[in-house]
Each structure stands twice: as C-alpha cells, then as structure tokens.
Amino acid sequence: MSTPPEFRSGFACFVGRPNVGKSTLTNALVGQKVAITSSRPQTTRHAIRGVVHREDGQLVLVDTPGLHRPRTLLGERLNDVVRTTWAEVDVIGFCAPADQAIGPGDRFIAGELAKITGKTPLIGILTKTDLVRPEVIAERLLALQELADVTEIVPVSAESGHQVALLADLLLAQMPPGPPLYPEGDLSDEPEETLIAEFVREAALEGVRDELPHSLAVVVEEMTPGKVLTIRAEIFVERDSQKSIVIGKGGSRLKHVGTEARRQIEALLGEKVHLDLFVKVAKDWQRDPRQLRRLGF
Image 1 (cartoon, rainbow, N blue to C red):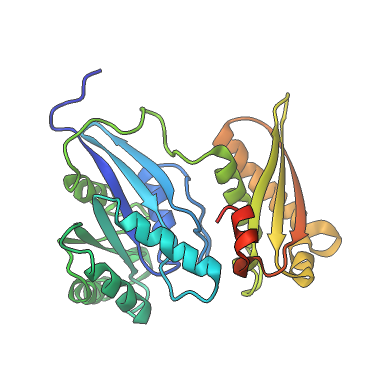
Image 2 (image 1 turned 30 degrees about the vertical axis):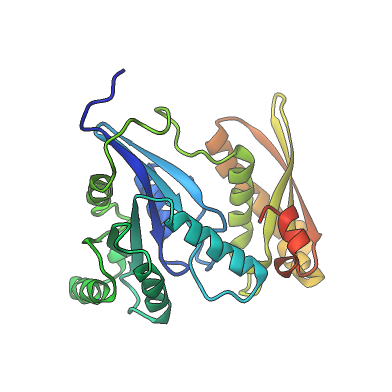
C-alpha cells in the first residue's frame, strides 16, 4: 500500500521529573501498555519506544527516565539516556503535573532544555488534569508557559483520555513528511525479554518501602517454549534485608509478584506462561560499573 504524500513520521520524547506521568501518557497514546508505571519515582530506566499508528502519520514515542540530580552511578547513566534521547528526536514534550506546583526539579529540567531549544520544538504538557479543579489547571498552564520556551501547550489526562488525541495531533504536526518507520501492528521495538523484565519489576515495586525501588533490578535468564512458555527471571536487590521484603512471609509477597507479572506477560505475548522468580543479592550494584553492565545499564 502506497503512503499518502501528506503522511508524516518521526520521533517524540516526553521529559519531566520523576513520576509526572510520562509512562502512563505513552501507554495512552499507543493504546496498549508498552511502558511500566508505578507511583514510585525512577520507575523508567530505559528509553522504551512505543509506536502510534494513524492514517495520516506514525509517531514513535520514546519514554525516558525522569531527569534528576543523580546520587549513584545508575542515576548518572539514567540521565545520560535522557540527554542522548533529546538529541535524536523531532519534538520534545515537557511534562509537568497539574496536581503539583512548579518546583526546583521542573526548573532544573527547563534549564537543561534551554540548551537545545531552537534546534528541537518543545511542547508543554500539563499531565494529571483529572486530579485538580479547572482554576488550578489554568494557573499551572500559565506557570508552565512562563517556565519554558514552548511552541504549544496542552493540558491532558492519560487516565480519562482527555485531549490525548489532541496531543497526538500536535506532536505529529512537528514531524517531517516521510513513510512509516515501523510495520503496521508493531507497538514497540523493545525485545520481549526487556518488556517481561519490566513487568516483573513493576509488580515487585508495588507496596514496598521507599528505600527498595531504586535497589530493584530484574533480568530474564531463560525463556523455554513448550505447551506453556516457561520464563525464569531473577530479581536483584542490594541487601539481604531487601531480599526478605521482596520474598515476604512464607514467600507470600513473591507469589503475589509472580501472579501480577504473569497476568501482564500473558496479555503481552498472547499465550500461557509459567513464571519462575528468584531473588538474589547483588551488593551495592547501583554503584558498581561491572554489575551495572551485567544488569543491562
């Protein structure tokens, strides 16, 4: 099938401090879950690509980690992922949440973005508008407009779907004319192992204490086809005390993690899955270059 002459395609990324709803927005635009979400900061650790297919164009959304002041080698590497992504996209969406006032983290990111604006169009996105009253939205939009040199600004709610389609229009308008970059039906270019590991990590993040999320990493060691696909995955933490938290009393918490992760994995793959989870201690892995490489950073 030939591509219409007005067809546009290209790359967009969402940036913002941790936990402003970038992953939820990516999933809402794609129409299926390709990026994990959590109430915990620093949930996203890779630049996950989600593909939005439309009759008039194709948007490739790159969901990045939240830019922050790093305290570990892992933090520095996550920030490197963000900055590398900025340099490679056609448009950047600067996300700020409607339920919080503009703060130092937003100003830090605006300062970083100011170094590259001029080369790359910047769209201001006020997220989580379903959580606040209209007068608060108006106030936050004004603050966001004053903060950054944006070509457009749009309030959205990924949860309710409000103005998500309008955001797609605005992003696509910034793309160059060109053919589709991915085949019809492809929603992400992430390897299955990466998405599976991310779903396990998402399930393990829920309901844990504040010190644990940064210390969690997951690696898929083996995928064995059969009547039921068998997946072996290892959850890494930094201390024995954290291992006990993940496993829970009598293994109850790990069992719950496995149930939740398997549900997401089966939806992704469209087949029955047997998931074996093992918890291991990799002492201070966030600060160890050799262990970071082993865990995929």
